[in-house]
Length: 415
Image (cartoon, rainbow, N blue to C red; front, side, top):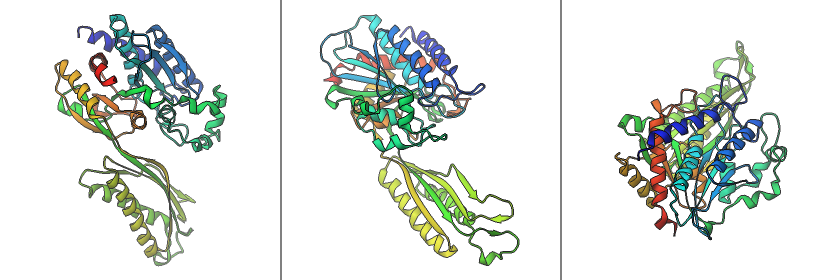
């Protein structure tokens, strides 16, 4: 495709414009249902209109660009998209690349005058990262018909609930069910995303076909002991919550290492109370994140962690409490869609590389609605969730070119 370089240049320019929309000077912070989200959504809506799409916004704030495919009449729809929200101090490619890729693909195909025989919706989700509220994938859950109304009661760091934030954003929470697509109206969902890992760079290829997205279990763990004087309580009499928590943190690592590479485990947050240098910790709270493509492996890891924790606390005279606050099953990408993406990559002269995703994505939620697939794009050093995150214009141009080929040949799959 002769205009790969131009597609990459346009993608880089659009992503840079989105990256300029931030709540904080000097770093990228764009959270769900904030003024920055509103500005980004309006910018994307303008691009969609310029590409010939009709634009709407659902009750959870997902911006939808709709194109009939150049052929009037009721048609199944191919959904393409990703998210606009970021983590704190983010990179600029995670999420926006998938939105921009969908817009540029529709723009290119529409200008070619080719009738597709199916419609396309480009979706710009507002909440994939969960950086503001303690939930993830809320907006794609709305589209998939899998939104949990209990999420509306969750509050951000300022005590604002999701329901209240939606109202402030101008949304009607009672209209959330209307955000759901009917399964019979949708053919598939596809998402273009940076890899967020080093596999493609290590293999020297720009694009990869995602085989599936790992399932996740996230737990809050509280270890409760007894606070005491650091100088006067003998070691044999201590009920040190932090010592017990340290044992469990290492246990998370050991369970993951013993899995033979099928599971990863992370303790990402830990806090000891009362948190003084001269007081034995009486309580420690920490989080556990376990991920695996095999849901049984992940569930077994949770059970193993809990069983060994009970034994540990009996030995140390402690208490332990577990709370699961996020549970998501693994999503396997549809083989027919994977093959179609692989064929598009091969048509551009590159080998097909298949790889799993260790991160969660909107495609994971959309797979509850319809067949789903993902196209990964090489990122420098595998770095993501970091200002150093980078995908080259050349690689982004190839990804959009592959997406265009995928869409142009999607007709038989849309039936």
